[in-house]
Image 1 (tube, rainbow, N blue to C red):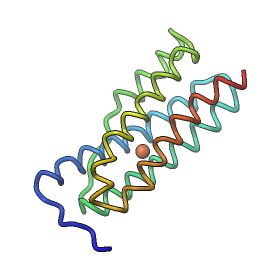
Image 2 (image 1 turned 90 degrees about the vertical axis):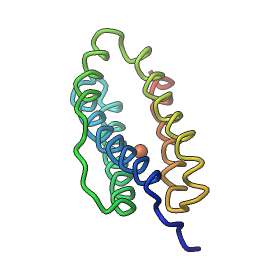
Image 3 (image 1 turned 30 degrees about the vertical axis):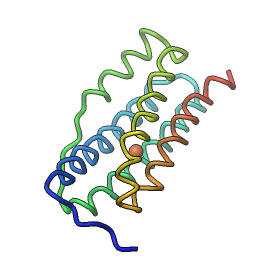
Length: 134
Ligand SMILES: [Fe+2]
């Protein structure tokens, strides 16, 4: 099935999504470096890599390069120390589940985003799952 044309309005949404994905790459990398639990660190490295794949999917749609925001990468390791993983991980999972909602209407139109959307759901489940093993 052919993908729809990227309208000006969609381009704006895709560029923001591309930036969000790139910011998530840095965020998960920073978290992987900050967390004490090796299993958590390994999971966050994997998530970081997958967000990088998502950014690449959006880059294909936009044909443009954007810069990541470093805010979350700076903030989350601090929050990890302040509130701990039991309070922080559900917040991260919510961020992932919100992305599912954000991508669902786009995936209906751009089928390439379907697996991206499903990944975000899985990411939320993975992050929450980390709390079940310890
Ligand atoms: Fe993502």
